[in-house]
Length: 194
Image (cartoon, rainbow, N blue to C red; front, side):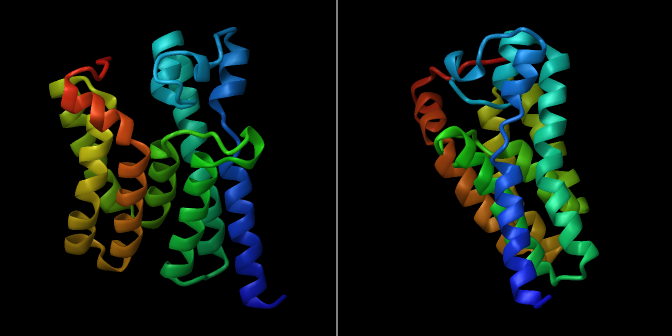
């Protein structure tokens, strides 16, 4: 099969896998309310935690991360360039943010970005996880921790894994756009703590 066609198919696969919002079946499995009708209305691990605690939130986080990591791992197995892998990663994250299976109303994309970037740039991603953990420990605000970590991504990538700088730059932009309402609430002092 033509390499370009295979890459297009892989990008489509990444988008479709990304479009599966695992928070919904996890909440059904734990008999929790629909996370889109609770708290921030975001179908992600943080909102699942607010309604069901650590266990369903952790399962949601792992599944959402896996759907970002799997397509990137496949593109690596197929020996695509790091830029093609980054394209696949962005398709998976975009799938979570604007999912075809949920009327294009998705989540913030942080967990999916975590899985995709961990598969592509593990050192940078682990450092970003450390930043996320420090901010979360200090302020207990998930959105703030996510934004600070993702905005740090391009700087750390430039220093450690420079080939991944375009990916982390685009991820930071996407995450900032998806967190605009959180940023407004942060500025107003109304953002919820965990």
